Each structure stands twice: as structure tokens, then as C-alpha cells.
Image (cartoon, rainbow, N blue to C red):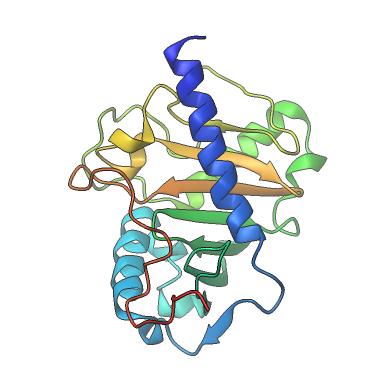
Length: 221
């Protein structure tokens, strides 16, 4: 098996584990907070930084004009610390869930019913959604030709339930110099999703996902 295929399987397992952890939070498992400023200090600062970096201003959950609903989930034995934002932007109903190491963007089927579209139209829809919510400029990237949350140039991957693709599959997420250098996209339970890594050249690897909240609320009971 080639090194790229081994890397692909490792990344696929990590992404699946992160998404599964979000899915394990039961209904009512998120506690609403009135304002983003009420989040635990470390998570709040981290969330503001990464959302400002990753999203266009008009799609940023911390843009007060959007009126996002914020909530948090403290880590348990099988779930990490998580912050959730629910809001509408550019005609899209979005749920953004942040862990310490990732940002997961889920698009409601009422906005984009991705599986109702024909094959090539699905990828076109992905590009339109990605262009409308993700920051097109900003920080240094290894390859400015790498598309954010879209297939590599010239590729049209199959996008069905339970499948996904990377914008830059040859790049190891552990070695990203900029979040834009690799993003993931897929379909889970009929919903289009994007996953961005909270990764910069200043940080090696990824942090403990259950020690993100700094006020003691993330201790496992």
C-alpha cells in the first residue's frame, strides 16, 4: 500500500472519530449560553480566533448581526469538550461545532439537499457553499492553488451518503502550516459537512480534546 493511501486511511479514521464524538452527544447534551463571551475563557479565545480565520465575516458565527445561538458540552468519558453555534448565513442553515482541534460545519438539508442532486451537480453545490462561507484569503498557505473544502483541481469525486474527500489528500494534517492547506468534505446522515483543522505551523500535532475548557467544567464526572 502506498504512503498516500496509508495516510488517507489514518486521516479518514481520525475524521470519522471526531464526527462520531460529536454525534454521541445526546439530545439536550449542549448547555445554551446567552453570549459567546460567556464561554470558558480558553475556548472563547480559541473560538474567536479560528472562526475569524476560517469564515467570511458574513458567515462567522461570532458576527453579532447573525444572532447565532451558542452552546457548550463539557467532556464525558466518550465525548470531548465542544462548542456549538447554530445560525443562518447567506441563505444557509448552519450548525458549526468546534472541538479543540477542529471545526465541523454541517449544512441543513433544508438549505442544500445534497443527495437529491445528480452526481456532478453535487460537487458544484459543494463549491458554491464553500465559496459562500469560507475565508478566501488571509494566512500563508503552502499552495495557493489548493481549493478550500473543494476537490483538487480536475477531480470530480463521488459524493454519496457516508463518503467524502479531501481538498489536498497528499498533505498530512499533522504537518499543516495553515488550515487552508487541507480541508475535508463529505455527507453524513444526508447532510453536507465540512471539516477544518485548527492547525498552524506554530503547533505540533493536536491538543488534548478533553482539556479545552479551563474552568474545571470539563472534568469527567
